[in-house]
Image 1 (cartoon, rainbow, N blue to C red):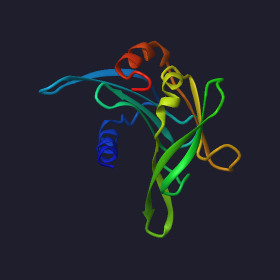
Image 2 (image 1 turned 135 degrees about the vertical axis):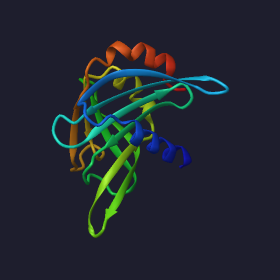
Image 3 (image 1 turned 30 degrees about the vertical axis):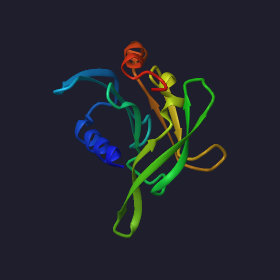
Length: 165
């Protein structure tokens, strides 16, 4: 849980607000013990307020976070389905975090897929990703994201955060 809180703080501080799509960006953070390589990319939803953030760093591996900015799931453990380009859909375990908005319907703040090793290689070079905020066959909200040029940084991303790490 402590890692999720630190990650959420990092995401909220580091997320650019104005752009719609971003290819992999690489930064380095020197610590006393190591040079941490960090990579990130994001895409705003093709329609609607959602944003998908991809993160990779040499200390913590690959992470995927989805910010619906609307109600799509109740807080807690759940399943979501990702469709990446022309590949078959992948059902993933996830945690949803939501705020109670004073009696109004709560917004889902962030959805954090847990078994990202299932999609890391594919999403690292994705052009189009659709999120179904539920397992297959369950009615739910969807969001689609178009990324620009992730494939050009995939090889570096897989070196920094190898699959199955």
